[in-house]
Image (cartoon, rainbow, N blue to C red; front, side):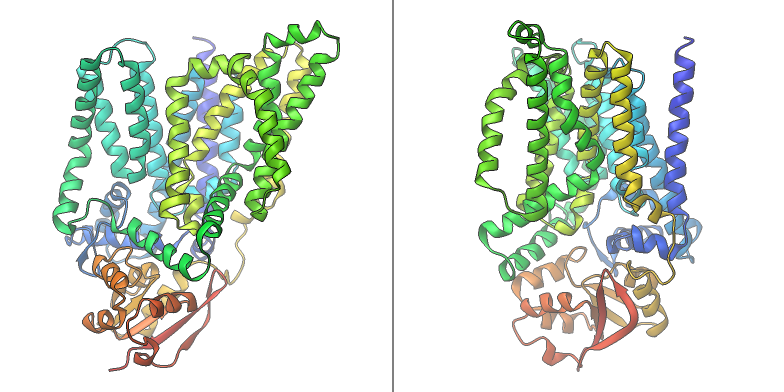
Length: 582
């Protein structure tokens, strides 16, 4: 009991520190937050929340849409009931709410880490890696569903672990509750279905010798999920006729159009795979460095091979340890180089394959690390399946490389969980205090150096005048520029629709507009503009090039010459606007 109270105080202190870091960035001047964290989709989500609050249901420009992740959007709707006439307060409220969800996510992560580790310092390391990671902070305050979805993923894992850790059969109540959490997680973000599926497979494996129990488990999980996700699924399907959100289909369509006109075949997939790897490396750079350097010592120091190798000479084990560490670092460097430069040398592939033949059996069967992974396989296996599913799903099917840091953010959780088990095994295998201190000093140096030394953390809290990124400026410009009732079309329509409320803003990339998506597929954008009575088209040059490619008649002949919008640049792209000719 005496040891529990100080540990609780430490955890509470870490959670408050996490919240302070997020709120410290979220409460910076709005223009700065917009430029560092808020994608255009933030404003799409908030516009749909406002529509729900106004009694119009989940719609954009008066038309039903399912192109969003519902839980976050519905959670934000009450804010617009309280402050219906303000644009900035709801954004602030969203960022505060997401910061709280991020902090609760860390709490659940630490609870899981405490359940599978013995070392008192490991949860502190994991918390530090989460708290001061500038990309994690940016993701936490991106105004999107990411923090809500991450919390639900951890809640799913926590409930699953709590119900299965005792080794007893799953009761009807437990199984149904777990299914309800599955459904709520999918309601938070649809790709959570991959983790729900992986956990279901583990339960089927658990009851593989009892087919009746396995079948009953699946039915109860589906029944629980139907209670929490079923109403939205039916409502969305009845209003749209789609089983899946139109946003994913539209993003895939836009990316395939880009592939058609920029890259083809294996070149395109190399681009998407390396972009996905880059997102994972950047999101987790400190912890991946730590894993690459320490994973082999963690496996080797607590291994029966240690004594066997010493029989062949005093230095044999240390030679083996150093060689294995060089190998794991070599693999990390090669993968990072491939992600950065999109090339990999054949010799590097050979060295990785040869090394795996030597070291992989050792990892899996000859070490305490391998034993720990088998001991917690009911958690580790579905997490790895989930991470692999996310990577394959986005890199090979959905695409949308500009969103990979957000799409693949849950991989952070998988990496941190594995790192916790690895570090726990390593620290317990070090008999000498000075060795433990050396390892801890290395970990502190990497976490602090990578996250603080690159200046990205400092930049979150240092507003710069006239920030040139973000989307808020174009929305405010349209609010001042156009009279009430003007109909505007834009591919990136989020901020335009959110701020220029006096206008009707029609989404032209199909992400929240099914009829536009169908027009894009059919190549009938000019007639779509006329059918929607669009008066002005606003976008980046690349947006206009995309719309032109999806037109069965010369698009520009129906538009006035491009007019540049002065002093507004988003992500190095200038904005243009065109008047639609009668």
